[in-house]
Image (cartoon, rainbow, N blue to C red; front, top):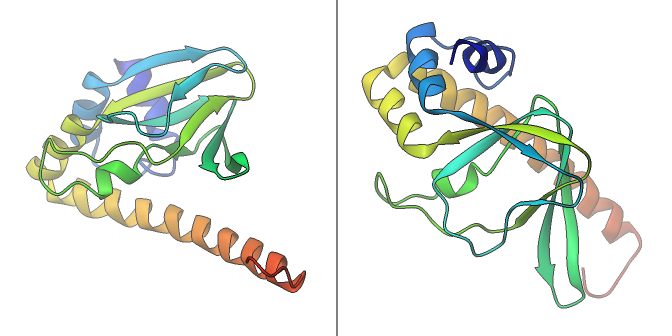
Length: 161
């Protein structure tokens, strides 16, 4: 578990959190290995955890009338699968996955159960404050990128955008 704790502390999402809370999260975390083309989860799946990409790249895809569209590529040091955690209406009750995630290349990921995050947030408000602030900053950066992409599409004057 110390190895996972050391890996997590290098991730911006967890780099400044109190070590005791991080140790608790790491205790419940696990390493996953994915081969290129292997799916981490599918749109519509039940969810109970988020993931940190320790190495490699994961593509996030969403179903559309045209098939599947790539939404984002998530690389080393970033995270995915947190949306269902944020949308939860109550502890232990999570939404279904809103997209599919698939390895682009050999990947090592850290699976973090939502229950361990909830426990850490509840027992250590400093952890909770820092974790949610860093999560909000990361999501804000993703929204800004999406805004830029949307403006680029609209500049093409496509009728359906």
